[in-house]
Amino acid sequence: MKLIGSHTSPFVRKVRIVLAEKKIDYEFVIDSPWLADSTVPDINPLGKIPVLVLDDDTPLFDSRVIVEYIDNVTPNNKLFPAPNRERTEVKRWEALADGLCDAAVAALLEGKRPKKEQSGDWIERQRGKVMRSLDFMGKELGEKSFCMGTHISMGDLAVGTALGYLCFRFPDIHWQEAHPNLGKLYDKLMQRPAFADTIPHD
Image (cartoon, rainbow, N blue to C red; front, side, top):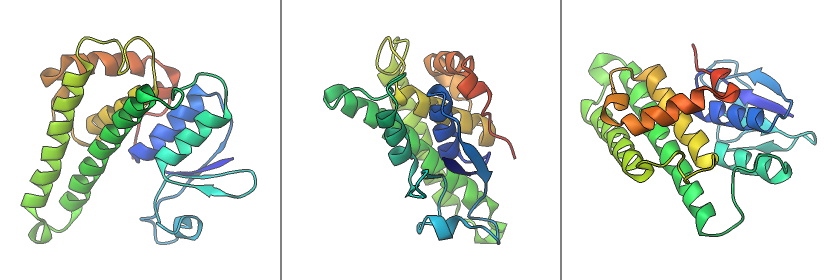
């Protein structure tokens, strides 16, 4: 299998973390749709990363589809429970974490536009989504060891990825101070090789 992506995308990192947790070998192909000579649009018509190219050359996207596929085809370290209420809650955690990343990426990209073309209102709207998501995460986690209680799930990997992206791109958002329980979860996740080996960088 080949994973196409970058070292900066939180969605690519999420997939890399799952592949590492599952101990699956793959080829990591560095590419970004922002590059002039990118091949991503030729593989994914949406022009987004990550893309997982299977052994039969089938391209899978987006990250939620990829991680669920990986979990379904490997019996070890199951990250999604069987279809039931708990599975829905795990997927809700993932959707929340991915939504936080979507908002953070949108704010980052808007901030890279020429100053006179930027929309401060748009940036604040996206940052507001980030802050509300953090508040919700903190309340939902409470005093639990993991998002779903005592066992790690896809919810934790997605949340950890989102929190790591904030550390990388938005150090001014001091979420650890506002939500020490999230900080405790993140520190615990960072002790796992899957997280420690995939820290985002430019």
